[in-house]
Image 1 (cartoon, rainbow, N blue to C red):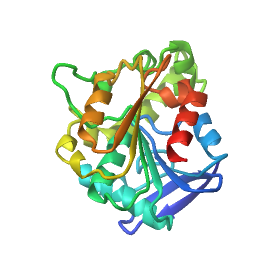
Image 2 (cartoon, rainbow, N blue to C red; image 1 turned 90 degrees about the vertical axis):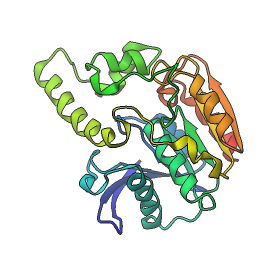
Image 3 (cartoon, rainbow, N blue to C red; image 1 turned 180 degrees about the vertical axis):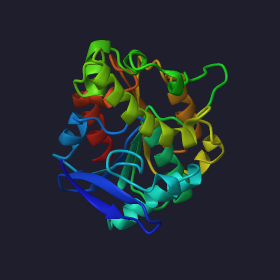
Image 4 (cartoon, one colour; image 1 turned 135 degrees about the vertical axis):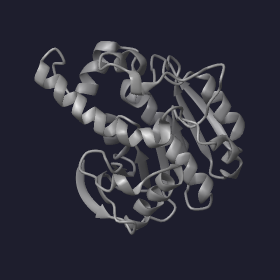
Length: 260
């Protein structure tokens, strides 16, 4: 995918990865950011015009001090879409990105075509608390995010050997920057009362969840489906929280079938 930097009216500078042609599909990443390889986006770019912006505080995007709360994040998403010159794009968000995408769809329910929420954060069920990602040690992320832990560690670290002190330091620094930004809407729990606003979400919505998700249990998928007026739910087997990365072929097939 090619990348370019755009400026929003608020003053953030956002690096956007872009590929493909066809109907516009904007992808919002999770708390870990975009990985070095994102094969599901490459596959989707064979059918859609993909835009994958990095949030301020991630990669080369700047302006993270301008975003302070959930409303800021949601409006920033629409600012990015405006700066890209898009009209009624499809919107897809993973984990924290799903939370932002859902908020965007509630704020401006007539300004998107279809919505895809992938293992989305944003709800809280006291009986099924979500683990605190801000307390995780580096080796714990793969356990919660992937069915195949070894594959997960390789993807998350980009091949870094975390037994090497210098590589571990690099991972900590990059991860701390990302999680510092994510903490504004996810800490101490990812609950910003999204459940009170989901009734406003009018776009046809597909909810995709990994059946073995250890971070945000599948019960949250059922709650999203119950709260969103026009939603359908798909579980993908042999996938945990990082379902687009673990099962890219099945994931892309489901998204393509839904978007048309």
